[in-house]
Length: 87
Image (cartoon, rainbow, N blue to C red; front, side, top):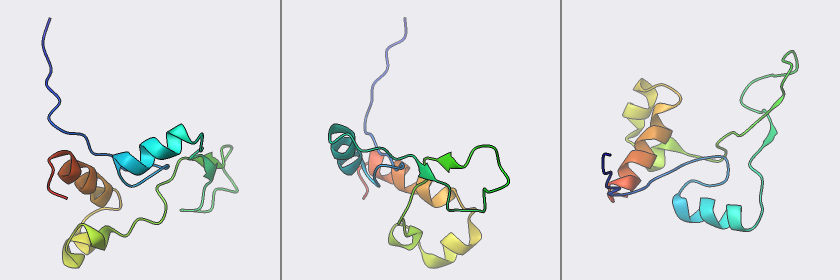
């Protein structure tokens, strides 16, 4: 059996932008599932999802880098830097 060492944890999800707010929302019984707002989902069979809302990527990345990156990179960047203790 292999051993695993967790050296940090970072997250960003539909309930919060960090582990503390996410954990509080889970304990409070909040649900991150809501109607899709990032695109028009009216023609789709599923119109609900767990979207990350109210996240400004320029709070964790240089604005020039945000423009060059794809739409999902800033959220991965934030969770990775938080897990390493850099934010």
